[in-house]
Image (cartoon, rainbow, N blue to C red; front, side):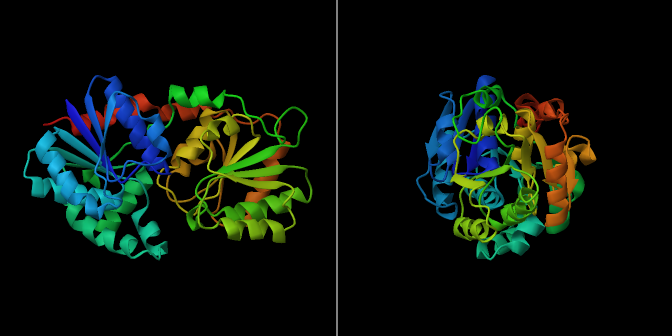
Length: 363
């Protein structure tokens, strides 16, 4: 079977890492796999297996990649295409129509459409949901990464809920566990050092690291601890200014994007997800798989499903500095933290591959 996975690039986020993991998993099953990228760039390119062919449409952006994707479909004629990220999903639907070739198309929704669209100042983010109303009905299958995302998508684009399949991300892999055990040198880590709290994600409004920094500053007044936030983004200067204004610059570091955040996750005392919204937050699952205790906002969508209502980690309201500070403080005081590795293993690559193949196989 010949499968193509189409997305803008392998820059940055959890969706890109998940698609690279799926491509590798399909190839490991002996399938012919093309990873078709509008632009072949990004840090996750190095994680793509030699068994996966990378097809670079050399477009820079998604819309200009349309002619190249049409030519690819006519030339290569894969039996199935999986696309990810909503603007790329729309282009994939249009490309299949223009190519006029028989190919099964499954589109994957990764985030809360209503929240990400309403909070964005980007014109594309506001226009794309209207295009999705038409495009997603043309796909052979529609998937969402969590039940919350599926419910939101059905309401946002008026799509019957029973047309949407929930497939959790392929988060936990042998490579993740291996990377978590790699050496990591940092003066804040080691026996006898103050506990380290970790956040990971793009420095954007969605991740709400300002609430985390405010909460940490409160905890820091009564307990010696450290905060590290791994990631890069447009709010770096604003967050650095906030750290300085709160007087915690000696206890907070923003080192930027990390190739191996898992080595951090396996060594810190506590991982925190402070997001305002998500689809299915991979980093929360990754931290659990690495053995970290976790605290998360109960944002739409994903954390409540991952933590099963708080069974595997503390859930706090979105944007609530006091509640987050209390949760941080309590977790730093408890010696016997909940071992959430067992729950994290549910989100493994084999489960995801099996579920996607059931949708992608030509009927």
